[in-house]
Structure formats: structure tokens, C-alpha cells
Length: 238
Image (cartoon, rainbow, N blue to C red; front, side, top):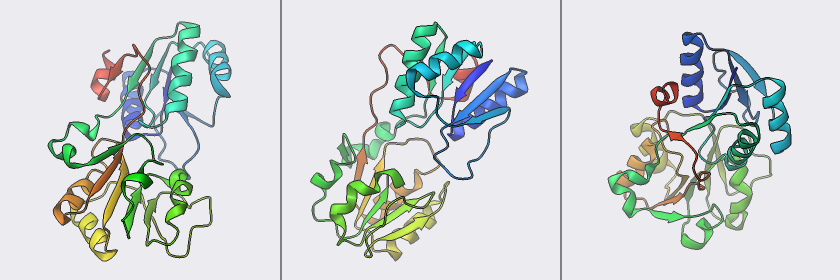
């Protein structure tokens, strides 16, 4: 059995390709997103119980290989996967979409190492547009008096300040729509994570078109020595 640690569009594409090839595939979703898009093949939802739980799962289910296709910022499960596969000797591949750091215009963006650091580099933003996910919203509560616009998939788990606007939607997003959204809400700062890929990249071009500054949270480092591929084809033929 091949275990895919998933939840991303790349994970779903990989699962479909492996199932079509005739492989026994199990995709594992964290369960943090309501009504997720389900991949082909068998699916489990929920955590493993840390490194020990994942190690036991690999042994008990005779997992032949693990493909970590989680979000670039899912650092905990990625670290657990590296540790568990090292303990069992199971092959591990990291499938992660290319970073936005390689874009020509990325040098004009402000890069920070954490979501919390955004507060330090954008003290004057009056109407920041947050696209860093609902789990990061608590970090921005010091901006309670600002006209924050936050886009999330699922409802926030905290009571947001009255001055904030919460937009619920799921990508992909088109350039024209992103420009219209930023104009409509008078956005003066875009805050995003370096998620990479194409599903949500239109916001970067829209902000650039409108002269809106961009702050990007850099990805956490990958485990040293981990075999990493950037597309489904490479994951199929490592």
C-alpha cells in the first residue's frame, strides 16, 4: 500500500494517477477543512497521534511507501513523516509545489519568517488583506481597530473584531476577480504565505497591478536529505 499524506490539489492528482496505474492507495487527510475535495482511492481522515502513532500505522498496515503531499506549511506532519519512515525504513518522497520565491517580481516583496513577523513590517497598513488561513487570524488581533479583510475557507474559530470583514471562498481565483476584490475593499496591503502553485497566484498579479505592497511568509525548512519532487509525474517515477 502507498500512503499519501494529502489535502492538496497535487495529492488528489497523484492519487488519481496511482489508482489509474493499479496501485493500492490510501490518502490521509488531516480533517481541518470542512467538506474537503476527496481524492480517488481509499481515504482516511484525522491525525495519527504523533510520530509513534504514524510509525505504528506504517508497520501495522504494511505501508510500502509514503508520499508527503501536504501543504508547504504543514511542517508538523512532514516532520512526523520523516521521523516515522526513518524508524521503519519506508521510502519517503516529498511532493511540494514550486515556491513563489522564484518569480521575477518576488524580490520586490517583503519576506518574513513567520506570520507574527508581519505585524512588525507593516505597522501602517489600514486595510490589509489576509490570505494566511483562519488558524493564523488570532495573530492579527493587535490589528483589531483596522479594516482587516480576511479570506478563509471555513469559519474562523475566534470572535473577529467588528471592524474586520471575513470572506469565505475556495480557490482557484481569477485575476479580474482579485483586482475587483482589492479595489472594492480598498486594500492597501496583501499578506500571504508562500503557498506556491497556480490556484491562488492571481492575487499576487492583482496586487502588483494596483501598486499594493505584498508581504510573504516564507516556507518552513524541509527535513535535511529528503527526496523532494515538484510535480506528479516526478512522484510517479522517482
